[in-house]
Length: 140
Image (cartoon, rainbow, N blue to C red; front, side, top):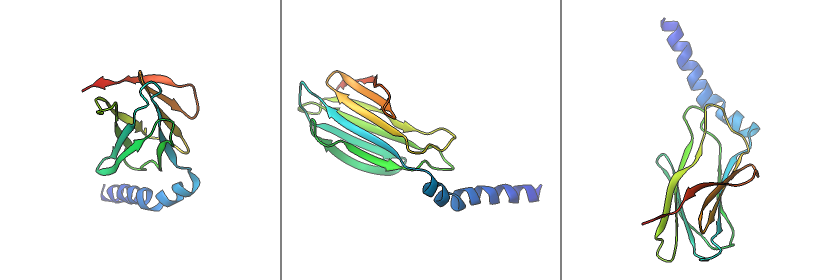
């Protein structure tokens, strides 16, 4: 029993420390992108994302300006989840909060997750597939 416990701990430590660098060399990073297509209002899109205690800060995306994006590798041991808040409107009076990315137990490599903010709603596309409506804006 003691030997099995030691072996289990060794495998976990090896997977965490020994293979994370190997996986990052063989696995392209995943990317999350936020686009501002607020055509009618031409308002600024405010984006704020976090991963656990890692706050990525607040970013502002102008209408038809460059998108805001960031790239990352999935965490090998723990679930990878980026929670994001989006705001729009002259007084940032419209808001939505959601998980922009959640990994499963498999390691994802090179995925592109695109969030498209439009006047009526927020749309999502994965790896260039057709966009689908995901969230309606909520007025504060």
